[in-house]
Image (cartoon, rainbow, N blue to C red; front, top):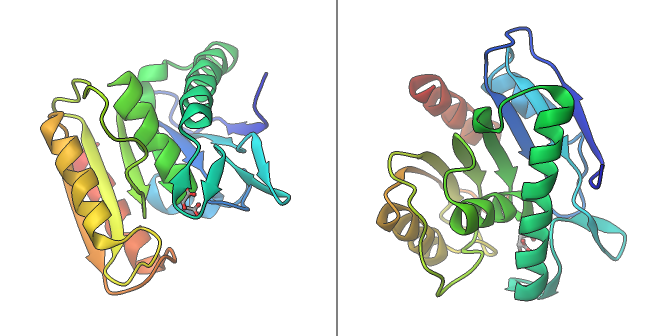
Length: 203
Ligand code: MLT
């Protein structure tokens, strides 16, 4: 298979499959504790980004901080979608049961999956995402649950960008909930707690 990953079958075979997508410099082990907090009975498919930036795994190339290589973003989004279809076959789950849980660069590729391919996921928990792409025709995301965790003092995913992403998803019909912390770019336990509560209410 074309992406390094790990799969753990959950105790409840009918439960969701959490698609874990790490931040820049992370790997497929990073967000496992988070999956435990969000839904301990879910299966987990955790993927490592295929791109390296100075030895740090990412999900797509960028030209500089916050400036994405669009061509690569489009290609890597497609590559991840293909991988998800293969993984669903290999591990015997319905791709419709996938719920993305991503942080930073991983949240950006999850947002890109939704903006390019519509409802190929059951929903998404996006911790500190940016707007991955602008100026494309919006897909139909009607009724799709999306949680966004943001920091009022995040210098990378600045509040205006969070609001822009929220509006994009709303325009596409998604049910978006944004949680604002007073923090910066880091992912805090309290934000994970709020995301876990949202998840329990939603699924
Ligand atoms: C990105 O490159 O995806 C964003 O700048 C967030 C990050 O640093 O990973």
